[in-house]
Length: 310
Image 1 (spheres, rainbow, N blue to C red):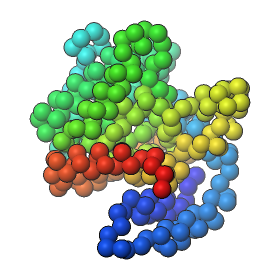
Image 2: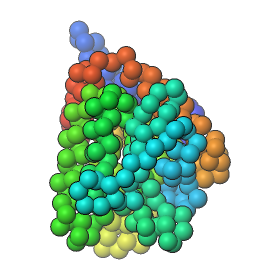
Image 3: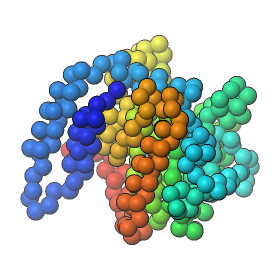
Image 4: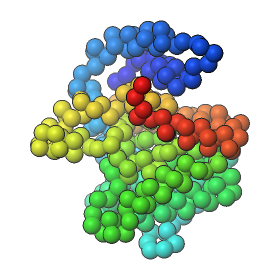
């Protein structure tokens, strides 16, 4: 479990790294100082700590999107279908009142029991689900509603039918649509953030991550199967690519970490919702004063800079 000191240091380091240098100013000394402090703290971090985040992100009692909708939104009206083929229950989308403002919300939804998990395909959406999400995003853009997305999926559904219906294209179009929206957008990874199925809903002005969530281009099992030809080496893979919130913040992939109750969000769903609501409200308040064109410009610049090595 990360300490408050480590969270503050990592957030400060992430912000410093994103500041453009103006008038010859140099921030390298401050960045190096913070990095040294983090390295001293990180000496106590073990592979077990990272794997604990993976297990908590997947915990069967962890709050899902609809648990947060129930606790955070008033006048919730759910939207169904992609207006073309089907209604994918792995994606939840709708309009509601949050903190005195009307927002659009899109999120992935896993199931609690076997029947519900099958109905929701374990949170792995087909192209129809992403088209439903995009329909909601366009509605939000048309009416000027802020957009909140809650990410919790092991990945987009990889089956033959999904590929036949244009899975890759649907994810790419979702990325493109989110990049050009002229409304405030906030995404939060609330559990598993797996591959393109997660990033399809996470190209936002602010990307948050709950303390025990994970976010990566591949699952630990998938990585282990490729590198060691043994999915049983998942713990070793997770330790190598570090999908936990602290390391995602350090890399600049996310903008902030949402704290959870002791032991994980599943121990107290009401408190987890309160903490998430505070972070979402703060992010939306910060974005309210930014002009639409500037929102779009900053968002595009931010995501184009990810992965650039200097």
